[in-house]
Length: 164
Image (tube, rainbow, N blue to C red; front, side, top):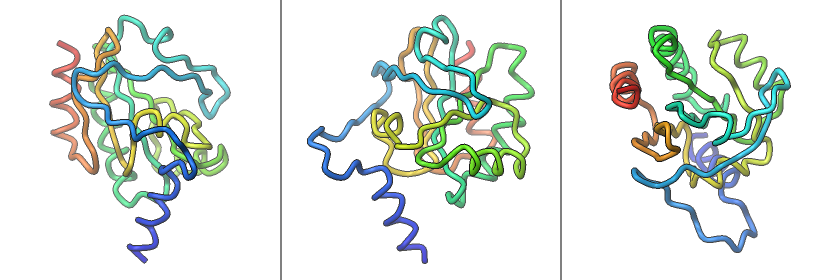
């Protein structure tokens, strides 16, 4: 079953048939711009909508066994620091609105969830596994990247570093 899940994740994010080389974003790189909508229908345009603000961009899916616990941990950090300017965008890779809404209800987080039903945004960020989290500064530069599960303390440390 685990092998099947890994295969599904790879196939979902690989962009079958694409002639584009794999994207490898790292610290110091400019975060790719994107446009999409939240699950409640609000338009989101990164970078212009977030210019001058640090931002956490998190890629996830409901089938990701590490995403649920980590999303709860992120919610705790978000609640403690949103008054200091912490912003989080949770981009769902490859699932529909109904699936995302059910997951939000189950987990109970409050930061915005964005639609990426065809995983185009995930591919533009070079996401090959979930969860993947980028910490982007006020100028749109990637300052940290976490691939895989991170605990609350690690997430908070990265978020606070970005808010300095």
